[in-house]
Length: 365
Image (cartoon, rainbow, N blue to C red):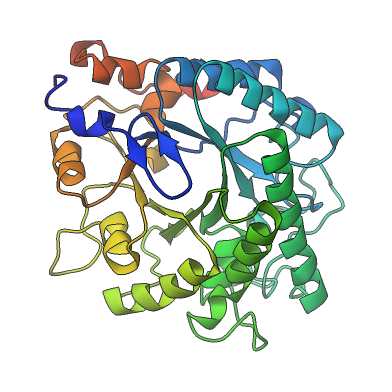
């Protein structure tokens, strides 16, 4: 591993709405170190360390929109209220002072939330049809008025992100959380405009993207993260073929997505038979939009086990990047473990890269 081998990672990236010093992205990772749902000085320092060490773009951990059931846990950050927004403003300041760029990941956990969870114990989990990820009924379906209020909550968060000085936003539409619950046939049985076939089930996301775009204007980047798999169903598929993926993506592009963050568990795995392209590769081919690829970058074990994992060669990743399969690379556990990961790779210090130790999850390094 040397500078020449990894040069593709360290080329600048320029799109219509954002310029980055290199192709590396810090993947969003829930940390749970925000007491009272407010990102602390420790959280700001955690993100700053990654910026100081050359990460091209930081995507924050998921942060809850202004809805009582948006997050599960008293230490998960939210993106509303004076205290939390002040905390995020400090995060932005620290990252920008260190020369970095940062976007918040706007999040609602939907039906994955358990009733009785903090911070709002009385709030019931909500979803398109009131069904959890196994298809069991937990609550009544959201009314159209409630759906519209959720859309506005996302839009308000986008407006606040711009006001606080963030460099864009990421909408979390992956892994079986609220937006993805509208996408997925198992959890969306609606017969109104938010249901129907796969294209019909994109309506909620489309309205969120459009509402966010109205708030932030044409030049503020909107990144959209999506996945086929769900947190408790790794074999789930929204789109079984490239044609279905194309139909799914078109409404999101038209609504105003700038960059797609295509979440897979292993970046090297082909998405469909008959092609070596992964999900990001197919998304770029079908939409022409810039894409972020992710999934066990630099490690030999997938993140969903949350066990230890050893470092591994980046040669396969670099080849795909060189071939133009994707534009940006999100790094998760390696950056959680080691804030200097990007700098070490850039300087050819392969021997100094740290294997992932699950003990790292217990602190902000």
